[in-house]
Image 1 (spheres, rainbow, N blue to C red):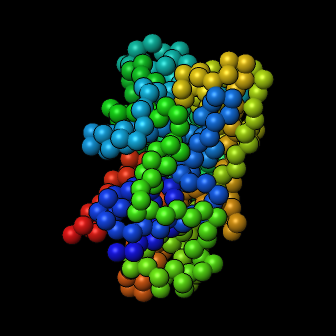
Image 2: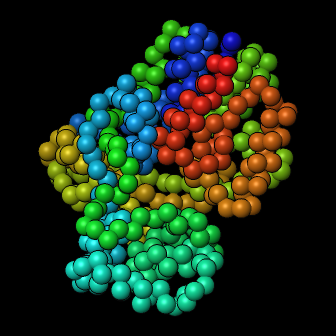
Length: 369
């Protein structure tokens, strides 16, 4: 078949790679001037810069871990985030280091007693929003310093106005373990992510066209291809006929510093309301300080309201938006049976990278039947 893939990010590249191996003729288009979507990395002073925010690959699935390692060698990077609240530093996710830093406790029993005492304000009430869920998990003190203002900046809403499920799976450990993820497989590709997408798209059956916007010539694309895989916004594809879905956008401010070590950690979150950004990434620490010893590259990350023309980074998966997304997908399936939606924007789901790969492989398996 002739298959068009809209989007040269991870989802589109996995689909292109696997479908090309099956003998299909693949055209990949992307409106950006480069491949790799939001996992795009490029080199500055010997440092791999994550242009669209930190991307740490992690998974519990050994098959997905084996799959991605076909395309790059991964280091053993472990994400150990530090939170800065008005100059006070705390380890994340919440663990015995955090509890010691917050309360001076030394044992799990002392930490649990402190949290239980602060949970009492909820009595036996089931949490009705993110604020109450956070207090139930870690108590009022940690909520006030490390969750409340950070969440408000991230989502543009007060925690008491957000659903509880957003924070329900937050790791809380009564051990001195700073690893942000529970997944057994974790790392960063040595040499960055762009090489992975380049290798996936390096096939005689794949034609890649950049600076190409599907929506400017939608009718022609729909006529010229047997099947289309679309990784853009599903509501935009359907001309917003049922209304706009909710997204959050981001702005990145990247700076090369004439010093070899700015903050000593890959990711530091800023959890107070007075700091306008949510975190600073120092890219060289994803590869253990590799690159120019006299320079470093940092990126400040500013969440912002999504408006047309900005990049939509996160779907806002509340009940109303999820219902609207389902309506769009049901409509598109009926009206455009040759179009398959995928990725965060196409399926309106928050996906980690391993989930993106699994979802793409599942779609490819449907083509193989």
